[in-house]
Image 1: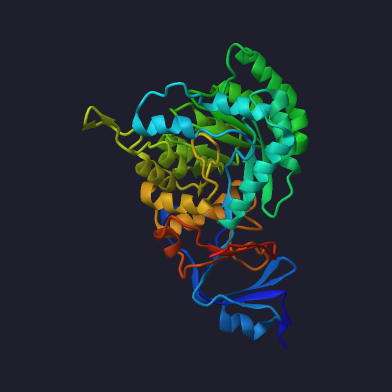
Image 2 (image 1 turned 180 degrees about the vertical axis):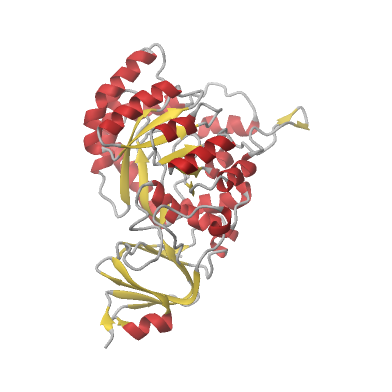
Length: 429
């Protein structure tokens, strides 16, 4: 006798499982082994996956009044975004044109302190409304779990305000709150560096009530190794996990900080050394790369000066991505959604940019945006892949194969989204 499922997705042209260990899939050889099932099916009961296989195999054991025909479509796990700055106010489009053209901005406010000023002055209702709108877009593009950092307060009370609002958000996407204690130093006219760090240390006990993680920035334009270790160590004492903004503008010892604090994830890593990647691999810290930052900041595009091509800021990023993989650790991808350096809420865009900019394979990209991203949030045990016993975070795509989802670009290819087995979004054609 067949068992009854809440619903079954059947006859998928291709079902991509992204299956692997809960700690994430590591190493170039394994990353390039992506399990796909032709004429695939997945059965769901009570929000969890109870069967995966070919349609013939699943339908031999399961039946349902709701069998959803996925013929000609791709079925995949929900996408996981492990690095975002969800709550902010104001946009930075005006300053961006000057970066693109190389012209000095005239009469234009910009930079992170512009975002901080606008965020501080926005009401709670305004911040929450924008966050919900952004979350709706993320969900429609396939994100089912999102890490959300503070960072645009640069003051203990302002950061705690953003954290409380983040923790209070109700949405189909599961939101993982992070307190970004050390982002960049505040303007010296506001307070000294030492006073700022002391203020953030004092705020950590309250932050630990709302945040799963504490984040620190170990970077030449951020904070020193010792400063990050002092804040991170205190956060660990309070039971918080650790995340690190690492080595974005230079080797600031970010990999060292991540290893010493046993960070769950370290992100950016543009100037991390091969030894740093190996150390992170040994420490179990997930390395998260951010191709949308590279793209938006034109870091791989040569500059033009007096009719001649100049050097690109970071032409080495494809090699960096390969070094991260070859170090043997778990590598993930993320949007770093924020108003300045990566104003995209779409993990689909990240997947497509990872191929075009970092020259990663389709299989590598799929692992990095699903299971590995979930592992960086310590959630690889219950999501990030289509496996029996895991949450039914599922996507039905408008394309037939996992490769098409990366090969095509410029529009939303997700058709329907389920989070824990509940229909969460249906995307218009």
